Every structure is written in C-alpha cells, then in structure tokens.
Amino acid sequence: PPLQFETLPVSKQVHLKNIAEEIGTTEADLKELNPELRYSILPSEDYTLRIPIGSSEMLLSKIDSLPVSSPPKPAYIYHRVRYGETLSTIARRYRIHVNSIMRVNNLRKSNYIVAGKILKIPLSGSATYSQTTKEQTAYNLPGTHVVKSGDSLFNIAKRYGTTVKKIQQDNSLPSTELHIGQVLRILADSGEGQPLASAETSYKVYLVKEGDTPFNIAQQHNMSIDRLLQINHLSDSSRIFPGQTLHVD
Image (cartoon, rainbow, N blue to C red):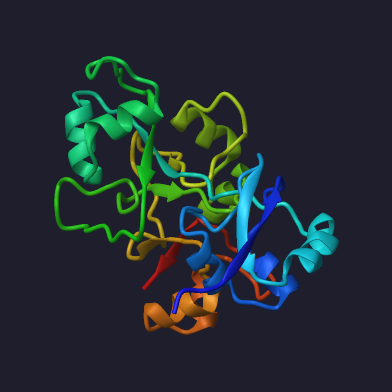
C-alpha cells in the first residue's frame, strides 16, 4: 500500500539521510515520498517535504541543528589542447559529445580552440582507459600526472624528482594553484620533451559517486582496502567525495 504522509514546508538545504535519522524513518522511505529530489537534498528555497504521519513536530524541533548539504558538483578532468586537435577529436577521445565540451567551457564556435588552451572535460560514472590505442587519454600517457585531493606542486615535484618551477614551465602554469582531475605533463630535466616514467600509468580510474566509501570501492574492484589507500596516497582517516578520481587495479 502507498505510504501515508503529511507535509511540512522546509527552507533549508539538508540531506534526506539526516532528516530520516532525526524522525525515526529511513532515507529510502523519504526518497519514495519525495522522488523529485535528484540528489536526496532539499533545495535552499521553500520546499513542501512529505514525511511519515506524526513526524512534523519532531522535525520542526530538530531542523535548525541539521547540517546544510550541497549537491555534488559536476566532475571534470582537464585537457590541454595540442596542435592539430579539434573539439571533435577531443570529444571522441573522451567518448562524449562536442556540445558537452562546448557547454562547460562556454564555447560558442566549435573551432574556437587553440593549442595550449585548457579545456574542462565532464566525466560521469567510472572509466577505464586503454594504453593500446592511439586515442589514449592523458591518464595513461607516460610522463603525466592526474592531480588528486591533497596534491601540491611541491609534493608532485618531489615524487618525480623534478622541481616546482620546471612543472610550471612545462605546463604554462601562471601560479601554483591546482585542480583535482587536472593533467600535468612531467618532463625530464635533460632531453627536451622526454617524459618521466609515472608509477600510476597502469591503473584504472574510478570516479567517486555519492554513497561510495573506500571499503566498497575496494570490494567492487577485488582489491584490499590497504591497497586502495596505498596507491591513492590516502590514510585510514582520509575522506573521499563525489567527483573525486581514484586509481584502482
């Protein structure tokens, strides 16, 4: 039988999970009652929340103490345009539509890209990148590093035996600011354009989704939790978040 419910106007951006814990129900029941909430998070403006009968008074007494939640931000990686590349060839490489690239980069003309320009490439779900094709992505190119949570130019330079200044020069970085998912070229000091070997080129890339934990990601990929933490330079106390990229076997 359909769930019986009452309604309560709420104007705070909170997660259904937190509400469920306070009123003694389950997140699944609240999702069923409020299926239009795409990320299980209430909007910041007034919203008529449907809750089990008899829960209004309890929720009203607890609503001010509930934490504010934000919907997950779109996940991106970053691609530096090379000579001869077009939006079409870049879109094929990442298996997305040209319009998706144009939209997130505010491009109006499909040919308005120049060599050296950094493009945001939207991602969704998990992805595995092959090293056997010419259309391989920057994740598997030798001499590249994909920026992860906690990375800085200093610790990246230390890992690859180079300098912050050289990484900035090779990637035309105006500052030391980095973005998660950004792809950096790591070149040797001697031998123009020669890449340094990267220890991460054999890993698959997994995009963290809402509700993921290191434990269940490790289980999904038949690897130990210690192995997952080690190859991603994480500790037992590290937190992961939707949109973050992790390396998996």
